[in-house]
Length: 372
Image (cartoon, rainbow, N blue to C red; front, side, top):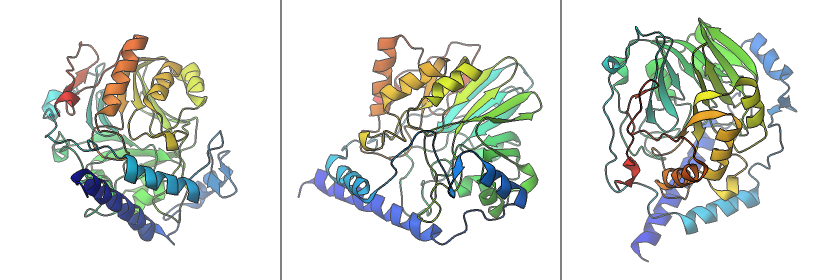
């Protein structure tokens, strides 16, 4: 047996073990721990909540036994030998001193990894899907491991206005990160059903705002709108689709951002673009894709079309470069979306992790992923 086959087998066993651990951790647990009667009522009254589960606007087939088996075979037979970087990835060290929160009109942001983006808007910090743990898994001794360190010392940030969560999967809602942040974050804005989990991790219920699709919340002059996505939720075998998933519109009277979360391509992108576009920057999922689960994770060509539909001005691909979650080479998302964007004359921005982007300046972003 050659080295590549051995590596594929090892990765497949690790992935399978991680899935089994997730199920064992969550099976039999209540789907809505620490949830008030008012929020339970909102869950059951949601238009998306049908027969005890949240649903997409369009039917998505889910993970049948045959599909799960096909995915397992694909992981074993078609896993890229380059799914994990062989060399240390370049990152730029980021510090709070590089921001200027006294500039209330400024828009700045930095990718910290995967779908975690630190944003300066209206003179405050905003953070999407924070995942700072070494592994995206229910345990820290197994599961997909980070390719690179977090480019900022989280303890150095004294206060964050709000954390926005797109859904409750482990690579977007991380217990260790929430516990690390809970005392310095003023607001946690999350999908319906997710709040109870945060409370169980020590977050003050008064800090939590739970939203349904198309609902909004104002934090001072910043409007946060929870918009649809085509995905699913669950942290184990016992809580499938018990909490909602979605995307985010973040806007002021001067700036507008879109954050896709995880999603397959669907007509809802056009509805979002019509209601809230155009966007200065659109953070669009582009990574961890596979034709077998295209209905819930976009291929790069789908990501580009989604960007066009929401009427983005600059596309920032996310959900890539940090964890090995599919069969493709780790650098494939950046390679594919760059080629597609060039063909369509799309303004594409793929910053180095930790690089601070200032909306008022033209950034220099070399193809850092080619260092492999």
